[in-house]
Image (cartoon, rainbow, N blue to C red):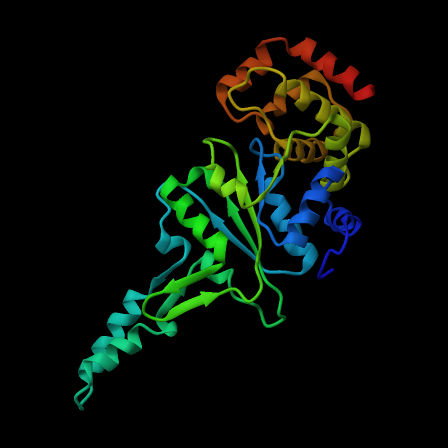
Length: 303
């Protein structure tokens, strides 16, 4: 599928890529594609925000270009930089030539496209040989500094970049842009205004069980429901880091590897490290309300 001409096309694309989603998300994705606007996905870690970009790239047959944000990310790592080692080598070769070289000519050569290292934002402006724009994933924008966020605002407004030594690179077609945030800090309203916004929440037990069965080969349907219900019970308690969908999938795969078709308290205690990643949380899960939590999850799984 190279395009998605309707909401139903988007729903089919997501389903074909085994991404279980609400219709609301399919509507938002369709509008982002139709209006050529960036898609801003916010939610807790592990709810499938990054996966949306991967699914779109795979389902539409596009390149996925990922910019992982972090504190201290600057323009040279996100946009472009010059290949200094290659430039120095070229200068030395020019100096070693028998004939006298024009210094200005050498300078023009070393600041040409062949010496330019294109980083994700600049790569995303290019069209592939197939003529399709890329899917640009700007992951965890909330981890970047506000200065970088302001720079990104300019890029997303015009989808063009000026390299002083060469000229302006403009997108012939706008890339599909997906931004994600775990909300470790508030992203500026000016950036959100340029995007279509969607909050991805934890799924209910039924939907999470469907996700597990689609992602874990050989998992018993009963086990998928019980594991999803138990993780949902964990999320209702004040753990330091509650598990995301990715942890549920990992846990289900581990249970299948152990030959389990249903949960029991001993197995939960032995494998809880697949779900919780901090020792304090693991200890709390094993020592506090363990039986009551287990029974609660079993009842929820049967409901």
